[in-house]
Length: 120
Image 1 (tube, rainbow, N blue to C red):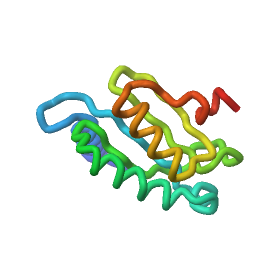
Image 2 (cartoon, rainbow, N blue to C red):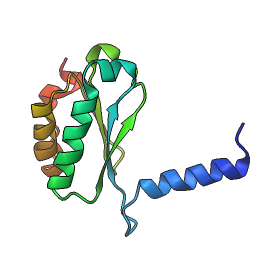
Image 3 (cartoon, one colour):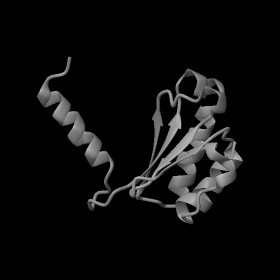
Image 4 (cartoon, rainbow, N blue to C red):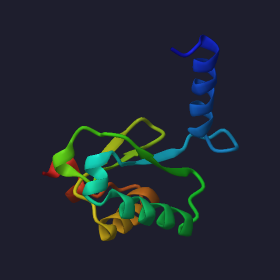
């Protein structure tokens, strides 16, 4: 069990990771990389996302791996958590889909509905 001090340190670190250096909230993009996600090809999806965000020079966007998302039949799964609290879940991802998500959703502000779980 963690001590209260350890938990507070973890909380403070997580909060800091959710803000840019100037204190603005960030857009978080997470890739499900549990066993099912990895088996479905999540590692290349993660790599393409990281490169696309870096090449687009998007300092307020963070790409991170995560564990089980809980919808194995739809892997690889990518979720976008926006600073306003909205979450978009993209399913059955492929590298070409990732490029569209970065261009249209992250840069353009328009989620790509055809790739979301709501469109399945």
